[in-house]
Length: 49
Ligand SMILES: [Zn+2]
Image (cartoon, rainbow, N blue to C red; front, side, top):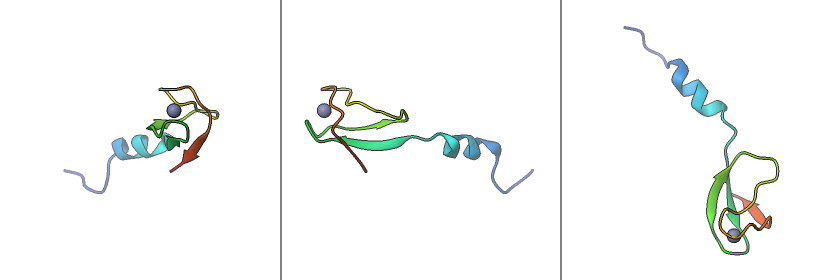
């Protein structure tokens, strides 16, 4: 009986996931590390999208 957003939404938004696209193979993936790498080819040539 309580409205106005629960703690579940806060938890989801606090996760610092970022979305990247690999310049080498074009793969789009999500990562939250400081130096993400492409899961397909291992390249670090990424663009944040
Ligand atoms: Zn790649």
